Length: 113
Image 1 (cartoon, one colour):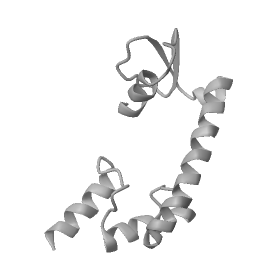
Image 2: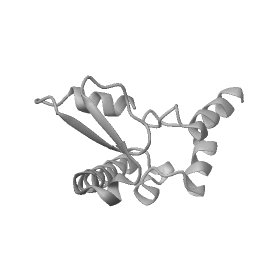
Image 3: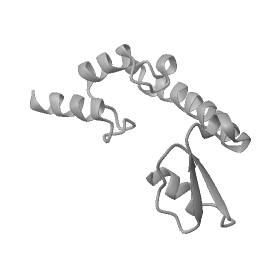
């Protein structure tokens, strides 16, 4: 939700309507509409989804160079068995999202030892 707020706030022009894929809306200072399965129904949401995925995949390849022990180039940040095992073994790196439960648990487990 915070990322969506920041993205909209960072736009040069204030949008008349923000279309969001899903069933929840962030607090915005403009009109917004949540659309379940929006990426299957609305071309602009579908395009944005593709851009976001390609951007994340490229970022994960870069992260893999800095943190090869996690295998970011392979799992692209998804919570695969390999990724979760690496979290348990190494704990999270600075780029892991602590609000994601498996990352938080790995951090807590590592801190407890």
